[in-house]
Image (tube, rainbow, N blue to C red; front, side, top):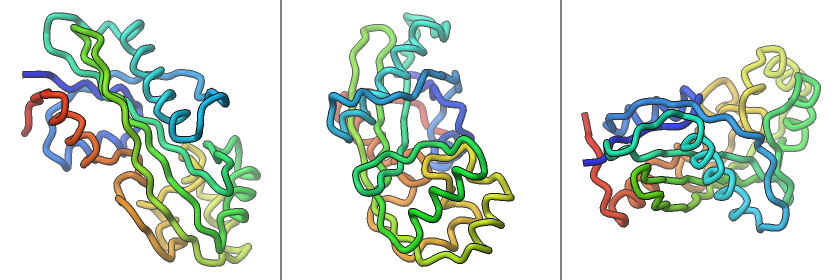
Length: 198
């Protein structure tokens, strides 16, 4: 039996795992989220998730010999081939929302599972498409003033007030929130990892 360790500070990822019935502990991992531009977009995102896992293994005091299995994820918003990360301030948040308004963008989440005892890894990614309706300046200003989007890729959280900006979603909703749980389940099954459920 493996013990799942979520290496993320995101309360949204914790909540999604809890809702899916997984038992896990949290060991936050922070790395510089600068993608390797020599890779294609999907591989860049997977690489970020892998680097988070390897960093957590180095500095996170995760003991060996206990079947610990690290789970990391990295989510980005991509518009016209360009990654929109977390906005640095309200002004940049507004710029992001003006660009997303009336457009379809992709949300890509890279997922890495890393077995602490052996170093064995599994990597994959999920993609969802999101179409925003047109937004008024008033709506953009009010959302930016709330600061809700500052800690989120693309400057918005679909599960919060920005949900009303969304006209259409294609693909897994939880991927847009930050963790595609069906993909996590598939990676666990494919690799024979058995983790505790509540």
